[in-house]
Image (cartoon, rainbow, N blue to C red; front, side, top):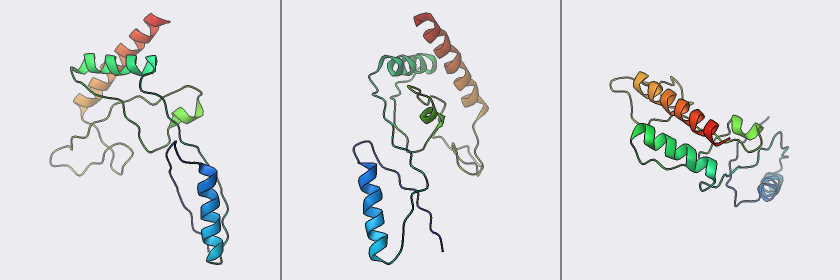
Length: 132
């Protein structure tokens, strides 16, 4: 019998210590544990200039006062050194529809939110290009 665990942990936690604790716990119950993969958590300081620039562009474009946030998933940003995930997100449900949010079943986005995202991306690329 196989059991797969997906353990997510914050940057203040030692991943090796978690793995060892899981091994000890399952061994005490007479089972064995094998780590198939590990992806250490990633944190980018929200005060880094690139983060501030991207947030400022988004807020100017959308006329909002949004703040950067950390999500619990693993994105393409883990594969590229110094990369960060940046993209549209709307917590507003689509009225009358059974559609999911980002990375959920029946994932959907309003056309207006998609167009806002395109405007933000365009302005962000222009802003970053002007600083290079």
